[in-house]
Length: 311
Image 1 (spheres, rainbow, N blue to C red):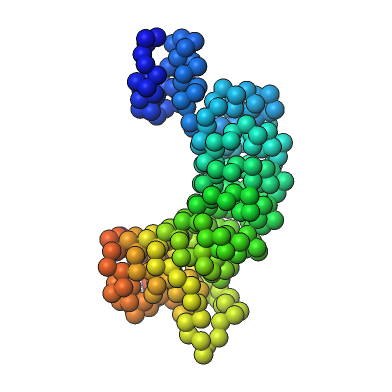
Image 2: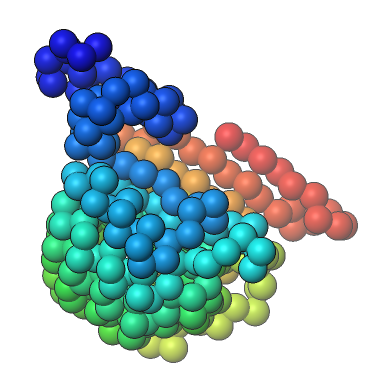
């Protein structure tokens, strides 16, 4: 093992997926310990690692070429020790200049101040924020302005987030290729239409609300009956579309996408109230590349909550 060329050793490291295997490999010798640290480009940090200043700095120092990092504190309790906080993110942002992919899950002590430090990651392309209860639209706007290369944004269960200016800014920049919004209580389907010109480059879009839909969902306040196709943005590059638990009526809201996605390949419509047969007929005629459809419907004439599922 000591005589292996660096290039060959790099191929071995690429084929080791489990962190435990990589850790075991690094214990073989000092040379391999150093080589493995330099070649490793992704790490996962859970509540078993306390990201206080010294341990976090040591972690970043050992792995100087990190491109993908996930901090996940699901099922965390105070007995598990400290979580990543704003100060930890400040330190982390100064130690990983090559970072392109970051996931923050269940980080209860990260707020808008912490998000502001993400603007230091000039190469960041993929950002996933899951169950961050303290962040607001102000912090997300700082990320949008600072991370010019951001191409994928996933937001899940961030209930203080509203659409505000971050969505309009990302739309004007037009860098996003993937946008996923799940169970964010203050973001409605009408807010997402504010992406405007940003729809031109989007290839994947997913919007899900939390729980059962309501037929009394508020309608777009800007909609006018005499202007049936008020939305004039272009979304012809969209290949992957998922809508779940929403109400859409009278050609408004996200239902508009079904008539515009000519490049669509994968479609998921789960409990979308208001979709008509004509929408699906138009979709089938316009989308010649469509290869996958998943439908979950709520029957209109049965008692109780039964499911009709077509995959």
